[in-house]
Image (cartoon, rainbow, N blue to C red; front, side, top):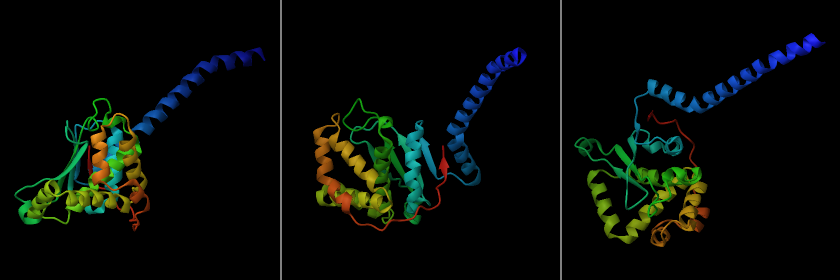
Length: 237
């Protein structure tokens, strides 16, 4: 019995080391799975989505989650670039080129600020996941809305957006409707609540949200036809 006890005690450190090794291996596997899947996608398809200055995985995951559902954008080139922006938190814009004069606009970019507008303390990387997803759902909703415009039409769109408060309000509501139609109702509402209730955000910004964007009460009840999730877009890391 004494011999058996000694054998058991001798094996205990090795067992602990094996358990630690298994735990580390499982952790590494779980954290790298998404990266491996994205690499396999890149091997099979040419990239159509690009990230610039984006290191945070939560940002990438939220952006792709939204883009997965926006089938209208799957044949387009979409880039997400994080740069300092003074006037807003995100900006969704078409990319004009000589080729787009003949084929139509198929390249879009989304600018992402480092900090949430009017705040030097609140970083975009610190946003809750549902709020970040709702924000992307709104911005990419603009791109879906842009798909119906060609070059001259987009120029007119921009002029009307700057000059007409009524047109600006309709454009912002349209982006919210696209998001809700594609199943992001709860995320859109979470984003609105976050902006309107956060103490670090300026009252002028909150007033702009109330004036031009779909009210929470409307977002809660707006009727839509839920669209199925389509195939995933190609991604470049």
